[in-house]
Length: 276
Image 1 (cartoon, helix red, strand yellow):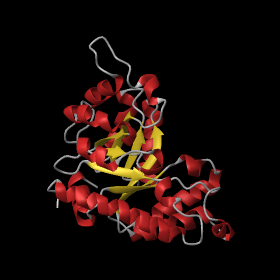
Image 2 (tube, helix red, strand yellow):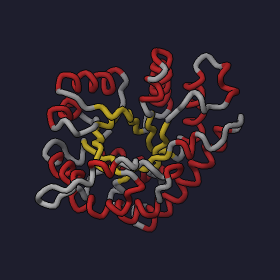
Image 3 (cartoon, helix red, strand yellow):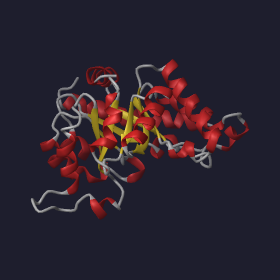
């Protein structure tokens, strides 16, 4: 999926919402545990209830890998269902990979060929040769970790060098040599929304994947105030705030209602920014 297709989907749905499928088997409704594949059934119900408002889904791979072969089957079933039923959805593997080149090549093969994700989150710490294998796939995306929403981000990401540049700014600047706004996005946490002004000075045209609204306390208004551009340029993720909005047998309905509320706010923001 290229950037124009993604932007057209955003305009069509009047939303730039990503639903994070952090599907913890210990948190899904008890009524599903009698199913053959309870996590897939949970995901299917969530997807069917929210796809009208979501332009992207983001399975967090850890919640699937932690269950061994059964978890991998749940992930495959989820990807296959989205690809077959909702082919316009942008599908992100939240895998945070990044290793020496031959290992990254195998990770890229897994997520782009075998599973056919549209994008994967990648850690930049090991440098260009750990990222470049992912960039060899046409119409696939690397989403590079730039400034994350966790408290530990302060340990390294704001470290300042001799030129008074913070580490996350160096990541942004250097990685511009590796890819473009047509195959590279960046993760910027919603809880660091005020930093988006500085980030947009370096990467004005790239899409940003912004986690942290909802359960983590990030503000959609602040994110869009500093981060939106003339092609929207934002995919804003909510995970627990949507998928675990309710634990009863009405969990999917409640998830849909929560997604609709966020999408309506996004629609208003897009209209105010002349994107509709």
